[in-house]
Amino acid sequence: MAELQMYLPGILLAYAALLVGLISPGPALMALMGVSLGDGRRAGRFFALGIGSGSFCIGVITLSGLSALLVAYADAMYAIRIAGGCYLLWLAYKAFKSAARPATVAAKADNDPQQSPAHYYSRGLALHLTNPKAILTWIAIISIGFQPGAPLWVGMAIVAGCGLLSTGIHLFYATAFSTRPVIALYRRMARWINGILGLFFAAIGLKLLFNR
Image: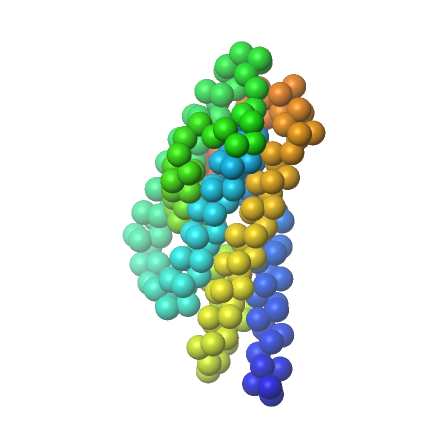
């Protein structure tokens, strides 16, 4: 019990740091919004599960110490930035393509996704695993809650808790973005929404590719 009281504040602080990151808009949240609005709730939920799985994987890698190698070797981090930038530019292309469609294109029904569940899951997973911001966020989270000399269970509690929080919150976003009022708004403003998403993805993707 004394050991739990000693490390619990750091664990809770790590959870709080993750929550702040999840609230602020980023590539994962914006992409999830586009999928949930355009392809429906079921597609959005599988996309969210992919994001959550990616978050958990990065957390495990960070806890194992492999993330330190990415920081130490610039080439590895540069390769991740290139992959992430290219993927975001591809998302920008898809968003601009949707924006160019006639305004009569409507959002899909809740349970009528365009592709298989595995397609949306893999998209969410790929987006998160190639996001340098997610990697750096996890390094900060582990650094906050897992101090030198702390037992392994502390790191495992941080990874498991943050992974569950990430998955749960993204599932909530997927549900919220696919409600009838939001879909009705999307039907009226589909071109504008997709155009804004395209600009966002293009700006972040180009920043990853060209910023040193």
